[in-house]
Length: 351
Image (cartoon, rainbow, N blue to C red):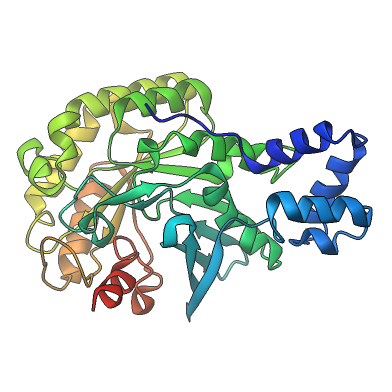
C-alpha cells in the first residue's frame, strides 16, 4: 500500500520546532517563498545567518526538489523538462491565453502503467509515482519565476488518481498559508479509477473532475484503454453521476478524436446515447473534443485528423443538447500537447 508522505513545509515546520525557533520563523520563510519569490535559504535575509546555515545543511540550498533541465517555447506555450530524484525526468506545460491568464498542466507520475494505445507517456511504463513535493514544485518553479498561477490541470504525465500523493498535493496547493489556490482552479483528469473518484467526491468536492472517455462503446474502449476491463465504462459513469449529485458540480468528458477509429457519426450518436441517459439527462456533463496529436512513441499510429469529421461530430453532440467544446490546440510543435509528453525525450535518451 502506498503511504502519504509528509510534505516539505511540514518537515520545515517540525525542524524549526525541534530547534526551538520562535513560531514566526515559519511565517517568515513562507513569506519569502510565496510573497517575495525567493527560492534559496541563504537569500532569505530576514532569517538569522545561523538559521539559514542549518536550513541549507538539512534541506539543501534551494526550496525546490525538482531541477529544471530544459525549456522549449512555442507561441503561448512553454514546456519544462525537470529532473527528479533517481535521475528520472518529468515534463510540465505552461499555457498563456490571450485573455491574460495562465494555465499549467502538471505531471503526477514519471511514466504511466495503464498503456492507453494513443499515448506516448503510457508506452514507456511507470517509472514511479511523484511525491507531493515533486508535484507541487512544478508549480512552485513557475511561481518563483513570476508567473501568475491561474489554473492547474493534473493532465501531464501519469494517471493522477493512481498516486495517493496527489491528494496531499491538492492540500498543499489549496492551503491558505501556502499556494492559497481555490480548489475550483484545480482539475484532476482520470481514466476512471473508481475508488479515487469516490475519494474526490467525499474530500475534494470543489476540485474539477475530467473523465477520459475516448469511446462510448465498452469493447472498443477496452482495446484502446485496458483500464476499462478493471473499471467498466458504465460503472465509472454511475460513480460520476453520484459525484454530480453530491457536489452539484459539472464533470468534464475528454474525448480524443482518433482518425478513422472513434470519430464517426455512429460514435457521436453513441456519446449522445451514453450521456443523455445519465443524471439530469447529461446536462452537467461537458464534452471536450480533443484533436489527436501525433507522438514519437505510442503503441498505435493514427492518420491525420480530418477536420470535417471533428466538426460533424461536434454538431451531432451540440444538436442533441449536450454541452460540447472543440478544444484549442497548444504546443504541438514542441510535443507539449495531449498525449505527447516525454515522447521526444524518451526517444533521444535511448538512441
